[in-house]
Length: 175
Image (tube, rainbow, N blue to C red; front, side):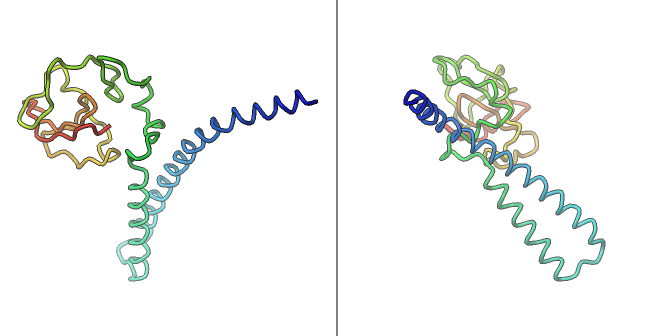
C-alpha cells in the first residue's frame, strides 16, 4: 500500500510540470479561436447594419473594433514570454540552437554567413534573400513598403529592397 502511495505521489510530482507547460498553449489556441469568432461577428454586424447606422450601433461597433485590436495585441509575439512561438507552424522544425547554424522559421537551419554584418546600407547575400517573414504583424513589425520585404537573418529581422537586396532597416536579436 505504501509503495502504491509513493508511486502515485511520484507520478503526480512528475506530471505537474508537464501539465503546467501544456496549459498555456491550449489557452493561446482558444484565445486565437475567440479572436477569429469576434472578427467574424463584427463583420456580420457591419453587414447587418446596412447603410444607416444609428449612433448607438456606431458606438457598439467601435467598442467591438477596439476590443478586437486589444486582443490582437495580446496575441502578438512577446519576448518576455519565451514560449509564445511554440504554437506557430513556422517553428515546427526548431530543435534548439545549433553551433554554426541559425534557424529561419518556416525554412529550417542554415549555415551562418561568414563574417557578414547585418547593417543598414549593406546588401543581403543572394542565398539569404528568400527567407521572408510571413506574418510580420505577429512579431510587431511594421508593414513593409512596396518593393520591400522583411526577412529572417541570423536571429535578426532585416527590411530589404526586393530588387537589389539593399538593407533598409535591421532589428537585431529580435527572435
